[in-house]
Image (cartoon, rainbow, N blue to C red; front, top):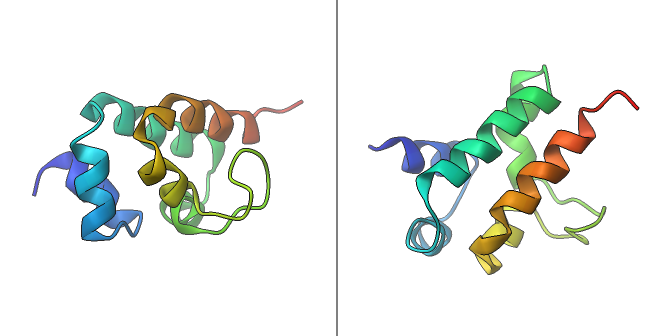
Length: 90
């Protein structure tokens, strides 16, 4: 299994979500999200499960970050930036 599918599987993506995402964006963008998760969370459970958890904050508005990404894969960079902002020590 290639790295992109490993990440999507780890995040709980359905086959349809994985197909939509991988056919629409570069693998490097998913790695960017993964790296953002590692930076924002020091807990491995949060690093792995954040993408599949319902999130009521902007920009997700009740969807999971994974659903949000699958709806429009071009949002990958904004998702990564949002995740990084969670871990910033303001």
